[in-house]
Image 1 (cartoon, one colour):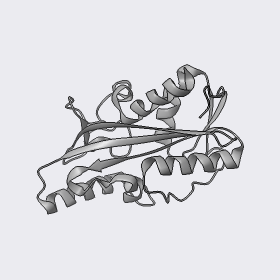
Image 2 (cartoon, helix red, strand yellow):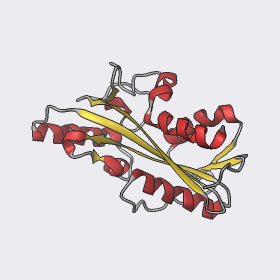
Image 3 (cartoon, helix red, strand yellow):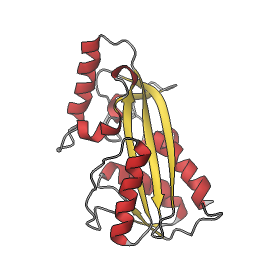
Image 4 (cartoon, helix red, strand yellow):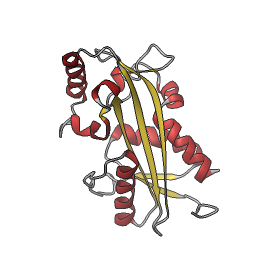
Length: 201
């Protein structure tokens, strides 16, 4: 691991997810780094074959760096519901299907909780960020936020499973929280803080 990291002037965000791209771009804004998405550059999404969030984040970042010759930052994140043996977990996006129907995925979570008669609604959002440089240097970070899932989606802010997740200490779902508040407490914010501390400061 190098003692100091190369200065980031241009960075590929290795995602085709508009919600993730918007959040990461907003988090990077204070650091004046030119940002472009893998989708805009026509980089295809690699198949996520790893078994951990960090593994899949590294896989996506490596693919974007290999395709573009630029440093790449990838996010792999998901929702773990403890009563469902941490499902959907790394399969969070796949639960939504090819059409990315997260309302169907949220309904499936509730159906499975009801079928199990589960009273424990504890859950956590996990975010892994992986940074890969063209020379093969790489670093990964992982953040989380704990809370619980509610039965019916609430709110239209955010994306993915945000409308059913309530962070510990809050009453609003991530779908109801204003973006500034969510960005301050989210799993992505916690992972990003580690990234900033290690790479940008």
